[in-house]
Length: 107
Image (cartoon, rainbow, N blue to C red):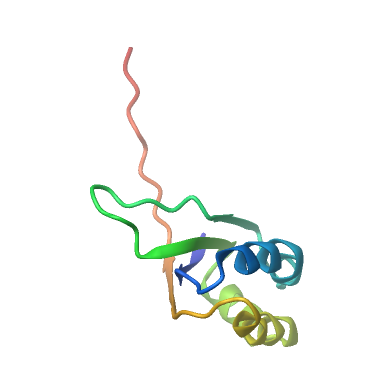
């Protein structure tokens, strides 16, 4: 599995961001071709210090090629072009291949 992770900075208008993100942006983003799963959160906290991010978005794809096809598609371009409609700060965007590690359970 390949993940796309977007970390959105704290916006000038948090309420507008939340409302637009839920009602407009996510319905667009869910149409990305090849999307296998998606999650987001506005409950972003730091450990011992304030978090520098307001929203975290995770998208799952079969592999890196599927993610790149999705982002290059007309829908992918539409999703990216929509970001300035709600985000006023920079976003960090990273992607990575996921490796599973079995967790030993005792007791």
